[in-house]
Length: 76
Image (cartoon, rainbow, N blue to C red):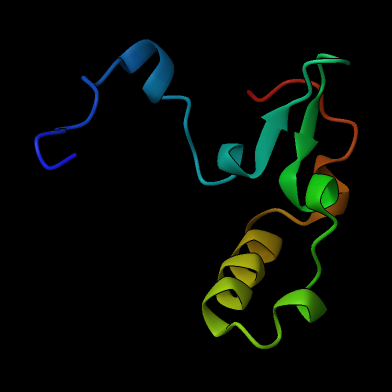
């Protein structure tokens, strides 16, 4: 692992990656994008004893609330 330098930058794919796009995963069965918070069923209460994860969830919720992303089928 020490010798791993990461993958080569691919502008066609990598330029579409945003913080918000990282919140979603493709459901192979339905072909729809699903918010990872919905998929995992996570809430702020789940992370109240883990400040680092709580801060990440808070950032995700402020950047793109889960209700906004429901029903979106395209990542772009």
